[in-house]
Figure 1 (tube, helix red, strand yellow):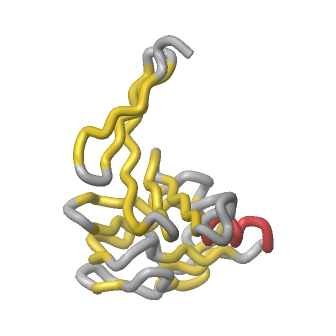
Figure 2 (tube, rainbow, N blue to C red; figure 1 turned 90 degrees about the vertical axis):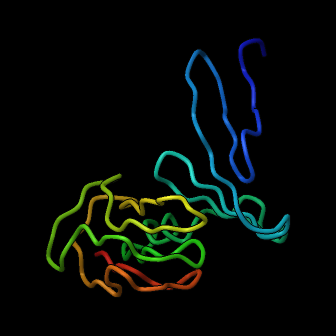
Length: 133
């Protein structure tokens, strides 16, 4: 379709243009285990499960939500405390990986049950950062 494009603007960085709007998408991982970061949301796909939702989205379907690190990263800032109410899309934790800041956002309206990380922590992929209920 005219006016739509995807351009690689750097390693792991794509610029998507559609309808006069530009978006930046960050991609990391291997061809069989790919992570994408777009508009504060995290998407994960593997060769075995090409349409699998991110772990945060999976938590939304079960009622309990565990926000996990998408890749090894450093916790820059924790923006909530236990007992806080968060709305869908609210930033909860800011990570830094590959010289990018990655906001981890609440996938739905919830209450913060537990914080499992602190600023300065080095976290691993799939490590639970925040538990919501």
